[in-house]
Image (cartoon, rainbow, N blue to C red):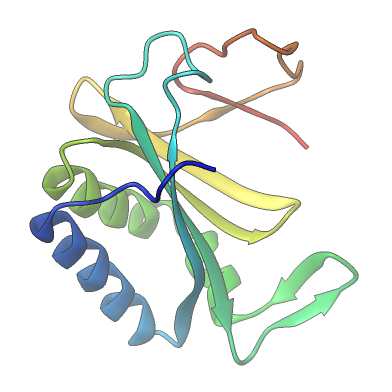
Length: 141
């Protein structure tokens, strides 16, 4: 197992700032992780991605799908997710994308394209072992 990826203080402050903004809307980050994505993509602009698992006290789910919650409201606001991703990628020089996840089946990934933040498109075909996705696509579940 490799050691956790260290992020600089400026980057940590940006992530904490985004978390604080989320908390003002009743959303918490239940789990946060940083992944090396350089093996997954053919042309990523930076080597890392940040995953944020969103949670809220008012979450109503049916099976594995969140039906309503403050976290779902945030998840459905593309403008807000773009702003949060921009804050993080502006201050985290190694992070190229941020994945916002409600459940295993509900996630959105946003990343940098020519220094602007866009949402990744869903790739209907999951790459074979050893194959890479083009930057801007994510596997669909």
